[in-house]
Image (cartoon, rainbow, N blue to C red; front, side):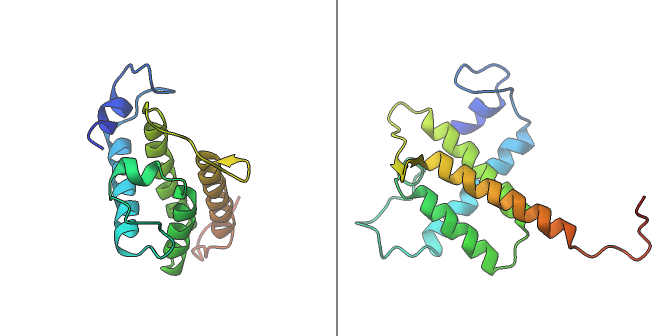
Length: 148
């Protein structure tokens, strides 16, 4: 993650699509990535693993089961009552870090059922956004709120 920060925040970078982000955005991505790795280490069901998976950015983010793990992570967050908008933000951080990992020379973008790991995680992000919109529609409003 040390190399991630300069790539995201440098004014010009030939390997990045789009403009540089503010340091707070980059810090948020790193926090979301570390939060995911914390879940990966402490709460993930590792019974289906072929062997131990090192707790490194390269090992986790280049694994063929990454999208499955992100889905399990979102289910874990759902069990804890986290808002859908927060889950969408957490997923965005994972997507940003995955975008960085994909740019590495040794990264192989795996597919399952015709969709890459990135496409699968983007699907999860869209679903979080859709659920956040619905959740926002049904939240309680203050009794003195004026709706024009």
